[in-house]
Amino acid sequence: MGDEKQLHEDRKMEHVKIICEKGMQASRNWIDDVYLHPSAIPSIDPGDIDTSCMLFGRKFDAPFYIAGMTGGHPKSKKINEVLARACVKAKIPLGLGSQRVALDNDTLVETYKVARDVSDDLFLIGNIGMSQLVKSKNPVVIAKKCVDMIKANALAIHFNKLQELVQPEGDRAFAKVMDIVEAVAYALKVPIILKEVGAGFSRSDFEILKNFRIGAVDVGGYGGTNFALVEAERVNEEKYPYTRNMGEVFKDCGIPTPVSVVFSKKYARIPTLATGGIRTGLDVVKMLCLGADMAGLAYPFLIACLNDISSDATSIENCMKEIETIKAEIKIAMCMLNAKRVGDLGAAMVHMSQELLGWID
Ligand SMILES: Cc1cc2nc3c(=O)[nH]c(=O)nc-3n(C[C@H](O)[C@H](O)[C@H](O)COP(=O)(O)O)c2cc1C
Image (cartoon, rainbow, N blue to C red; front, side):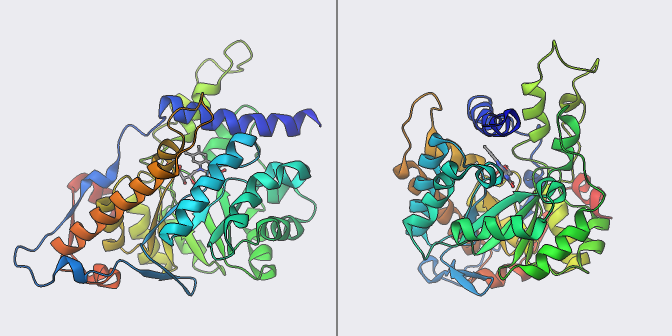
């Protein structure tokens, strides 16, 4: 195997290990600056609350999903299998991590395909980076390969400009990204999801995105797992070309998740997925009140599934308990808002701190 390919496989597992052991969470989670505007007079029974939702013409039992994290390593095969089993049981979607390494190495395909093997009914979101598409001679072929590899129901293209920029070895072929997105969107039979990974999409991004044929945007806002911090941690000081650690300098550069959700609904009006710091069912409901169609969680499920990176143990029980906890929290929040259905949440009132509003006005 070439050195570059080995490097990518190693880097993916190194990310999982660093995040698992050290957290690598943003210093501020802005979802705490969004408050429900609850109603004191009850009008519905908790038992009558329906948490199901629709996205891409499919019905799910709850308005959240497990966001893409891993693949390409024996350990990630186990993680993907457990997450897939949990998502099938809970009837929610699952995202996989970047499929980059499996495009060049057939032996790694099973670390992703394991999720599809769990069930044909699972709504599975494939994943590839914008940089991999730009670098390839035929991006449409690459995108189709990712979809076919796992019979994906949708393909997420991750936009991770900040992460690539703060890595000394990062990919920086950015200029043609949107031309390629357009070509891929027209060529694929499944919807594409444009997905940030911690820096969020801005208002001007959404003004551009509204003109593209995109299935959904995953805002990937600032406030949760922070890849600038992850890259800061990976720096090899002896070989580092700069006097300051770029990941440290830029670790707080990003649009807060709730702000990016509001921008998406206001300026693009495309289906919106909220990831970046969603930690509870209350957070899910807050995002739905702001206009998101679903919310996604990555880090909490990595921890639930793995707990201890040094051991090989994965736990479907922990994942199911986390899913049930989030569902229970969603029901409490919906009951406080007298919202019987997820669709009612768009009309529910929320309050934002002045500081958060300052990002929007
Ligand atoms: C261990 C780990 C690996 C990740 N790998 C990917 C990836 O390969 N592709 C991607 O689009 N996002 C990846 N993400 C980003 C998540 O999908 C999600 O957008 C981000 O972590 C924010 O959600 P969180 O705050 O709930 O963790 C990864 C996240 C984690 C925690």
